[in-house]
Length: 426
Picture (cartoon, rainbow, N blue to C red):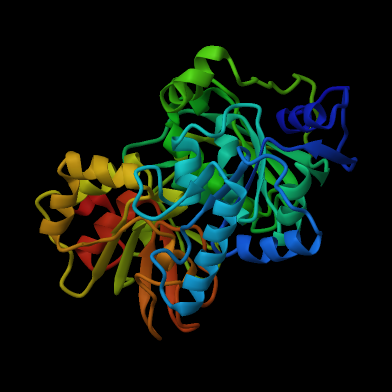
């Protein structure tokens, strides 16, 4: 039976020759992930199950990132709960504030070489779908499913249908993976891929960097997709040879390719050269406009970072635009490197000095303002251009505040101009 990439990975991990959309299966997990918000309730369920040890201390990932550094007493208690559990269970992949390997979960997991092609990972965070950029299957679950997965190392899935996104051409200057995924979401809607696999193909893929692919897969959930996934190519292999040279040299990964006659519920053709600099206006990621059409929208704040756009390429792109320029006097600009490694590289490259000279706030790696947690919460009536992934009502603060989603070039330009703007205006 012909299968897509996702279906082949699920079949293999379920020990089956083949699977079909709608099948209910139980699959073996390579990794399970939790953060400081979702792991504490999972720990409570884990203890209620009467289980004494996690299924594999080397395959459970626990990361402090959402309310880190702790914003209040309640968040400190959440972090303490996970920290104590990780120590009791001797969790190998526990990541604490300030360490070189630490940062936002969906930045450090691929950059630390944990996930490789062909892996299957679930995480109690909706943007776990990020890792499909590496040719793996990754998806988000709830805390109860996380608890059971920590105990057993397996979980159930309904095999998804697939949408094929065929990419041709190449992106224009300053246009990024963020603009691509916003255009896909705008085209099909926030539920256009509901419980389906978003599978990318076509010669246009080669023009997307690994950081760009990670951004695209990160936001697959914003159109309802169960997962997003890219085929493994030379770009993928070069990336993993750098992040985990030992496992790469041993060939401890598996490349899956969709069958040529695999069935898709829909095929979307996109010429990358036609993708414009794009923003998503409040209050849905699907409410897209050309950035050039929104130049009358004044702003109060800009956030550059998050699990969507806090990678080294993103921070470097922001520094290139801010160099020799100043943040507008009416705007607060917060730059959040996605990991301690990215922070240090930005420091070594002189980028942090550029941000400081421009008048930006430079934060420790954290999810912070993305979910309205801390480090940049909005007041009533304020408007923010953000490189994060969601702009729902009240997402970043007061229910009467507004979030405009964009890629890094538009966000940095807007911070300088004091309104929604583009690099060609600088």
